Amino acid sequence: MKKYNFYAGPAILPQEVFKEASQAVLDFNGMGLSILEISHRSAEFQAVMDEAYELVRELLTLPDHYEPMFLQGGASGQFGMIPMNILGDNETAGYVNTGNWAEKAIKDAKLYGNVTLLADSSDKNYSYIPKEYSIPTDLKYLHITSNNTVRGTQYHSLPDTEVKLVADMSSDIFSRPLDIKKYGVIYAGAQKNMGPAGTTLLIVDKNFLNEPVRPLPNMMNYQNHISKKSSYNTPPAFAVYVSMLTLRWVKAQGGVKAMAKKNIEKSTLLYNEIDNNELFFGTTAKEDRSQMSVTFKLQDEELTNTFLEKCAEAGCVGIKGHRSVGGFRASIYNAMELEGVKTLVDVMKDLGSKKG
Ligand SMILES: *Cc1c(COP(=O)(O)O)cnc(C)c1O
Image (cartoon, rainbow, N blue to C red; front, top):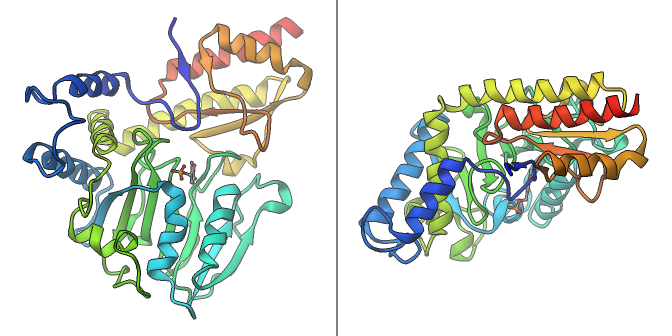
């Protein structure tokens, strides 16, 4: 039976990518060797890394002074690595707290410099993106989480400031075009919208990122990863390879503009059902609704198990909400087809008619 994967992460990837990746595990490019066993210094793997870099540059139209990197340690590793490299002891960074991930980023930043909490949506369970707040012009950077994977909120416009943004885009990178010049650093764990778990994409503005502000172990120092093109040590070769295949797929689909169009279509379909079906309600402010992480609840929680059973019968898996918030969450990343969302909507409609 066909499954529709709504898990938040690790998450759905295109079937074509799974097929090609599994072939490469057996025999990569007709070499008679697996992608898993070749040297990361080989010409064959370096071609993979080169293409991954090229695809990131092309899909996000990066100017030359921006540099991608494929690192390890997850998006969580970047919560500390960013301030460690950039934020001096006496300098101040601004953070906006839109939920779990931002909170963790704030905690780590405080280890290295001053943190100003510019805005915080915890007063309403992180159900919205704060918009009215003033931003000091002397901040080293302003940190935002572009999509709150857990709560289902997403920035649809950026803070109005000349201060460089540092953005955790783990759950919406490559889902839509972005205004790259506003960013000093973008980071994203691959396993939501870009590839398998095991690598984290960094994109840095080299004019913004100078030598680290304090002595650092080599692996923590961005300059080493930039100068060695993500091969300072053994890179997460397979994760980079599968991410590269996924980016090839994004390009073949028409790039991030085409992704955005599809993502709007899918999320609109689902939110319309949430709003029109009297059994359900959305949990976030309408203007801040995420096109990737759609959160909702049942009016009558007693229907939870029935709903989840019907989802399972229709092949829809992974829609239980994050353990910290309950309810439901449909993660509808790039690789989720419209058909999957239609199937989920049909289950919701069906539940409604059974009750009414
Ligand atoms: C999943 C997620 C993280 C954590 O990613 P790891 O790669 O597991 O460290 C951080 N930020 C956001 C927005 C996420 O969705």
